[in-house]
Image 1 (cartoon, rainbow, N blue to C red):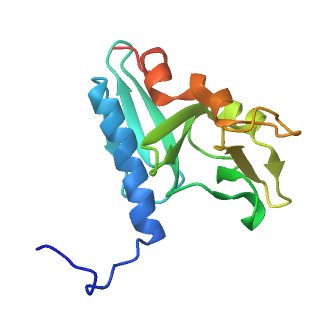
Image 2 (cartoon, helix red, strand yellow; image 1 turned 180 degrees about the horizontal axis):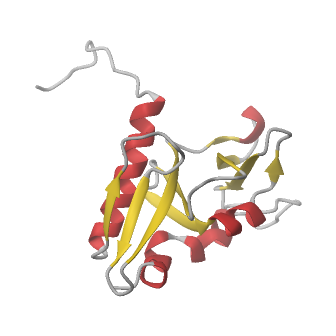
Length: 161
């Protein structure tokens, strides 16, 4: 069925966005020959990834944003995710649906790189996506700083086949 402008658009829920992020991680892993499985429980672990060479199973919590937004509502374009300081997962996958990108960090790396920590032990990792400004202006992270964490760059090391 082809929709026209008179057909109302359905809004994506946070469940849709989260599921899309999990599937994006699985898709990118499959393209690299790495198997994974989604979990149906909501206990802070979304995927289990199997590394054939070691026989190890690794747990992953997936955090997803649909698109970049202006920092503070009016600032530079940024993407960011909240995650629990005490995540039960070994790895965190940070997804941007708009960019079809996944960054993969160990829980320890994510805690070290995250810029904020709330009194309720929630961490915030974010970076600016606007790469047109060469000056950092005190910005802790730009998207280019995170290139080495892309799933495509880390999967072979983390999940040897």
